[in-house]
Image: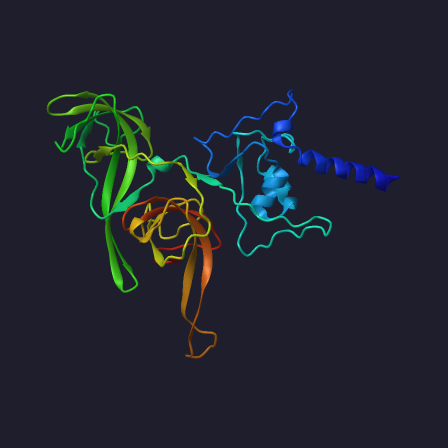
Length: 338
């Protein structure tokens, strides 16, 4: 008797999971969508007819992975009710992890391509490396009260360079630069790293100077920092988990840290000219040269160690800005990317 009850419950659970969103009861209240201005991660926009059961099949080639999707989407109160237009988080399985086996009674279904996206709300503040410096429209000459370090809501004065206009009411970015020179194999990579410090609104433009207010601050600004046009970029990136292999290396991190771990911004020496695109995911490897397997002098070159994954956020001609998604061990400048 107990077996029959459990079997009925199991059957009804599968039926409910297979009910498309178009058949949801009218009284069911749709959950609030994620605030993509704040939340970072991989997302999929629900389409009419989607169920967690079917999405699990499409993403992971197994309907039985649907509890994992539900687990990372806490705002979904009932797994049978998902709503078109809402965004749900998805996780990307490691390529070496096999999908869960399906029961013999469940016929295999072909994997249907779906289009997850990676959301990075802070895209407008990440740095980048270019061959030449971005045009500077002005330079900070002082803060209204004489403060040496400037942050949000501070009033600043800017000396125009004459390269372009500083328009009252318009938003610009405060930035600073530093040269990058890194040996990559037998060649040397050179470029100019741009570090974005803040967003600033022009309040008034006089002949010799402009008065402005810092609207958003990411790092303290100082006298001498430069002003550039707002470098607007797309924060929701189509994910490409298996692009063509590249032969790239990590140049440096945004803040010049020696070791780079999860969610840190760094740069690689390949960009648009190498067909690198935002949303592409690559693996990071560490070399094991001259590691001896004996106590003597005999040495061999071991295979590189896979140390993590990264996703491309922004590309320039010869470089890309990336963020580390995961790391098994510390990542360093000079590590290989492929």
